[in-house]
Image (cartoon, rainbow, N blue to C red; front, side, top):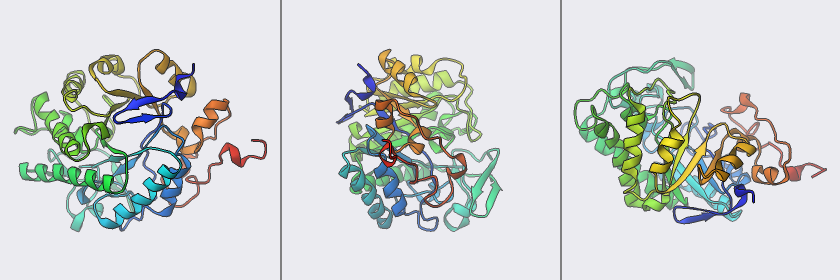
Length: 358
């Protein structure tokens, strides 16, 4: 039996298949307001055949915005727009989690309230540039969060979780990868604090656990997931002891009864983190990044994961599960339109049913 199309329990839900749509930045929200447009509703509804959709990163506080035209979940207008998205997915029988993403230092004053500095665990400037409304701009030295400000950011995640549920989402995922704020706390290269949020592995993991606890208090653990990507080293983040860091983190998760752990690996790593972390996590284990259908089937048949996560394949193929069922050809993603505004390369990829020969 092809396990891709068997049901699987993830948190409080039984998903109809094991094809999860990955969170992917698409930059189609209104830049001034962070409100998702009607295009966003159409985009997610087209892909409701996934066992679970995880949205693009959504900023949980005004300081969390890191890119132009990315959406938020911090006010009533955003909640109302996201409700249209959730309702449209549910109308087609789908499930959808919202990914909460605070960019931290991977931002620019032009996207911050009152032109302020981006925030981070430590005042360390990342390498690279931010893509702003006026084009690429060098990153700046961020503002190091005080203890009181850390507590406020944790509350922002709590409030964002509540708003996501108000909008009708089935759950939320904490983005703990890609060099954004949670991973900035996790990683020794970006966290040089000397208080209870820095130094030892236990201290560097504390922020992620505090945020997850706040999210769980709003949603219940069975509606909360976590994404991590050990040794991804994206956005100028690095850790001196990643095996120790992520082993400790995952071992701490088991008391939280999370819905799932989403682990995406990119490029060569010092160890096979799926072998290292998968047996240590007692909830649903999701594997993503660079998968094709045979690879996903092999992962499931070997018991390495409970579900598999697809990114650009879902981006370009709104009916990806059906294409896999039929072993049909896939549309190729147009990288030039990944982050451009408008419908092109967003909601105009054809489904099999759009073809006269389908």
